[in-house]
Length: 215
Image: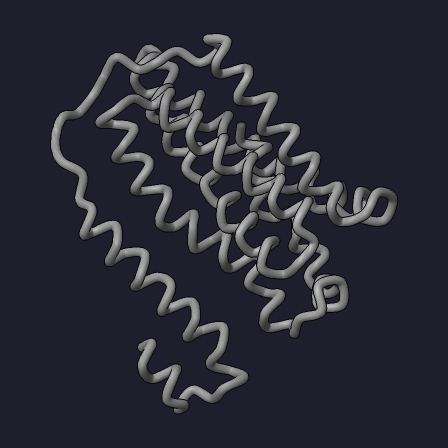
């Protein structure tokens, strides 16, 4: 799970210099292949974590992986900048797998094993990043950039099957309450405005009207 999470986050980083030519966009626009994933992750992580507490960690884990898998297929099959951006946005849901996974470990494992289990998951994040950075370059050189997303989608399907086969048990600890829809919407708008301001401020000018409005 941690390896899949690092894959969707860092997989396009080594190719950012090539994507402007591949997709016919400016370098500033190509940087959104990373930014849009981080934006979705920043919104999805607290949102899906709260929904997991209310409706079940296993269900939210499956929904995150389904969104990530659909995003991988869209990015791989579209071939245009807009479709890749949409796909990368959906891939950002993979970030929420980490806190949900930690929540499952906290609820299901004995207290004396929780610390070591979280440490092991954190270690796999580093291993995943170290492996995926060179592997994405190798895949790109030999199979093309679309293959990176197809492989990510295939890994997502394998994880979904594993969870559905009861490899991951549902947590018995649920927190009742209401979901803050307004707060989630405001968080999405605020983060989008900040990231647009940062990404476009250099090219349009920090004193330009669009940048001032976004701030």
